[in-house]
Image (tube, rainbow, N blue to C red; front, side):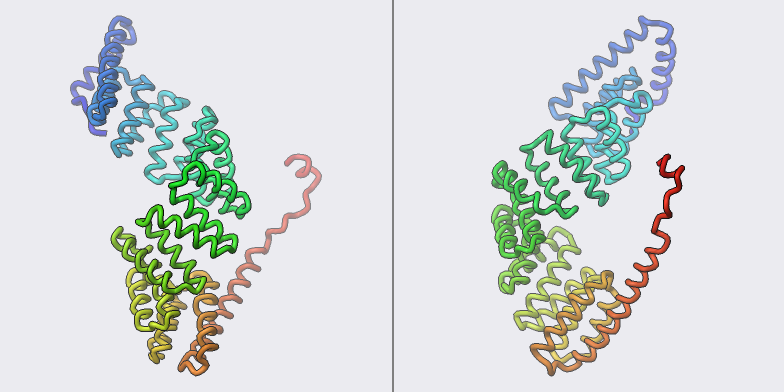
Length: 411
């Protein structure tokens, strides 16, 4: 933290603090000085001058270093200023002096959360929640942290606590839905989304969540309607347009899918989100393929791969379109590149083998396709065997031995 008081003045104040331990009148003078500075800091905060507020609280702390209120206020203001490292330094001092100070614990948790240090944030949130279990904001934040950490059962637990404390908060309802969906409890999400929609009818995020939930429940038509509603409420969200494109393409509505994928690609590109743009161009390439616009499909797939070369399905889309253009060697090369990028074996089956099989059913004379399909199936069989072998290996030694009398009696 940048010092407000010069080193020689700090030395002078340190001397005064030592003397104040034996001279109560001096301690009272220093306390009054700190109180005046804190009052100035609060006034600055009230008028929105955070820099002045942080400076005055820092001086107040110099005159009364052990004051938990001043330390916590200073840390919180530094956090609002985005000076997270300085805030952490202040909260560390506060918690060293007052380990159970609730405002310092919460402030440290919020600061760490802002810095995406989720495990450390979780620790301080939990310490705070032990002291203040009815803080709905912290219950919500703990749900968010656990969700981001992939601890979905814990996310469900904390979202339930947050919902008990704030049953009409749309944010809480939304994160509860996400947590439930993550553990497969989709049947419980409908009533929550209905409640959220009544409370906040103009919130497009609720429609977006409804679309995702309906999609997972195998209701693509209803899902598409929800996504369209989200797009009407917030036409500037590229994620919504990409979801519309994906579901519309699944339903065979390729012109709508093409339009929405183009919109999503442009929005993601403007926002500098290469991954989002790459997925949009991948979807666009698939749309053009199904619209029999093969060169446009090739161009879109190549654009996706320029942005994200690891996107295996885009390699397969590219190979498929090249086959239809009679460019067999380029197609084979695209499929080989895709195989090298496969992470999930299922991608090879769904996006390469199944799509090529479908193409051959429509056009049995597609030159070079049969040979490529045979190669893909051989790779798939080999990868599937390796995966099965790895699963068998991971099961070895996992069966527990029968408990002895002593271990059963003393868990």
